[in-house]
Image (cartoon, rainbow, N blue to C red; front, side, top):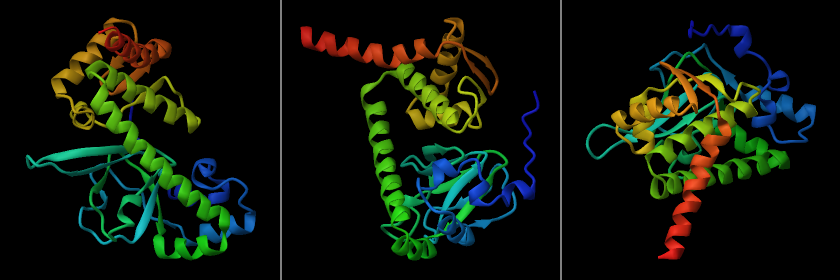
Length: 253
C-alpha cells in the first residue's frame, strides 16, 4: 500500500474553528470571537517532511507547536552519544511546553513523515490567556497532562517487562488515534523499530521478536509498518493481567 501522504496548502490553512482537531486543542466553551483571536496568532507554514526539525536542543524557546497532520518525535542526546527518544506526537498534541521554564529547548523535535504543524508564538499566547480565562485553564490542563504522561512513562519503564511495554505502547497509539476519529486497530507506524525500542528501553531485536510473537499469537497482523490489531482485549489483558499476577505473587511471598 502507498504510504505517501499529500498535504495541500489549503488543508494547512484551515482555521481553528473549522479544524477537526479543535476539540483536542481548544478549551471547551470558547466563544467564536475568542477562537478567532487565537486563530489570528497561529502560524501555518508549508508542509514539513521526514527529517525536518521543528527545533533543536538549545534553541531559544519562542513557540509551542501543534501537530495538525503527520507525526513528530522528540529526543535528547544520550550519555553514549546517540539519542534518547522522549516521545511520539500525533495530530492534536502540543510540543514544546517543557521549554517554558528555562526559556530554551532541552530536546529536539524531528518530523517523522510529511506533516502540517501549527506554530503558536508563546508571548502572544500569554497575552491572550490574560484575557481569556478558559484558555488559561486549558494551558494548566495541558501542563498537567504532560506531567501525567511522564509519570506513566516512568511506570512503564520501571514496572513492566518487554512484552508488556510493547503492548502498552500499541494500546496507547490505538487510543490516541481513536480520539482523532481514526481507526484504533488499523494504522501505519511512522517510527522505526529502532526508535520504538529506544523509547521503550528495549533492543531493536527484542522489539522485532515481540512483533513476530504477537502476530503468531493472533494479537496483530504486521506488514512492515502496517499494523492491524486483531485482539485489543488480549493486549489489554497482557498489560493489566500480568501486572496483577506479579502483585499477587509478591503478596504470597
